Length: 455
Figure (cartoon, rainbow, N blue to C red):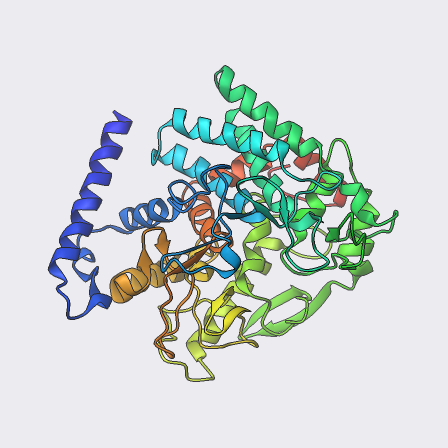
C-alpha cells in the first residue's frame, strides 16, 4: 500500500511538472514552473526536489564504482577528462542520500542494497593510505588521482565525510536480511580500518589533513578549528581501533581554548572563531558537512552550543544577502545563500566577506533544519521564479548569478548531497538518528566532553 501511494504521488508530480513544461512556451524559460505553484504543497515540493537531487547519486553515479562523480556537467565539458573521477567526501554524502532514497521509496530496497554492496566492495579495493582514502579516485580503477602536486595520498577530512556515511549505512542495514547484514559488516570493517591516530604526525596533539607516501607530511595542514572539520575529531575519538586521546581535540582543534570568540553580527552571536571569517562566519557548508550525521540539536561542549552556532551562522549569512551592501541583482529575503561552489571565474568559497554576486542553492536548502521558513522561501523562489534556468536533471544547478546573467548547467557532488540529507534531517531526522545511534559515536562524544540528549 505504501509503495502504491508513493507511486501515485510521484506520478502526480511528474504530470504536474510535465504540464508546467508544456504550458511555458518558449518566451520565458525562467518561469517554467510557475503553474505548479498553486498545485504543489510545501511537502510535495520538498519531495520533488529531494528526488531529483537524489538522482545525482543514483542515475548519475560513476558506473563502475557506484560512487559519486566529483562533478557532472550537462554541457559535457570537463577539465582534464575527469568525468569519471569520484570524490570520497561527496560519496559519503551520496551514501546518506541513497538511504534517503530507500526510505522514501525513490528506489526499491533490493536495488538499493545491491548498489551499496557494490560500493563497499569497491572501497575495500581502492587506494588507501593508513586507512584513509584520497580526495579523488578514478572510478574505473580506484587509484588515486592527485588533488594537487603534493596531495596524492590520504585525505583525512574527506575520509571522515565518507565514514560518516558508512556508519549510517551500517546502522540502517544491520538488523536486515542476510545480504543487508553482510553489507553492514563490510561498512563496519571499512570504518575500523581508518588509522586516525597515524594522522597525528608522529604523536602531536593535533590531526593533520594529508599524508602521502611520496611527500609524507609536506602538505603540513593541521586541523585547527573552526571550519567544516569537526566530524573528523569526533570520529577519531570514537574509533574502536585507532582512537585519539581527548587532548588532541582540545589542544589541536580547539587551539587550547583559542577557538572561543565573542562576536555579534546583525544581532546574532557567534561563540566560535570561524577561521578567517570571524565577523560573519565562514561559507555555509561549515554548518552542514559535519552535521549531516552528527546531530547539532542541544549538542554542547565547553566551547559552544552547536545548534545555536549553526543557526546564527545561517541567519547572519541570510541577513547579509537581505542587506545586500554590494547591491547585487537578485539578492533578497527569498534569494540568499553564500557558500563554496562554482563561481563566475572558476570556484570560490563565497561568504559575506568574499561575496561575488553568486548564490548557491545548496546554502539555503541544506540549512532547512536551522531556518525552515527562510529556506522554504528560497526553495519556492528557486523553483517558481527561476525555474529551468537553474533546475536540471539532478536538481538545482550548483550556482547562479542574476547580477552576471550566469546560469551554468553544472553540478558538484559535495553540494548536491547535503541538500538531500539536510532536508531529510529537517523532515524526519533520519540520518541524525542513524549516526547518533552508533555506540562508538556516543562514547567518542562523551570522551571529548560533549553533552547531548542523544548520548
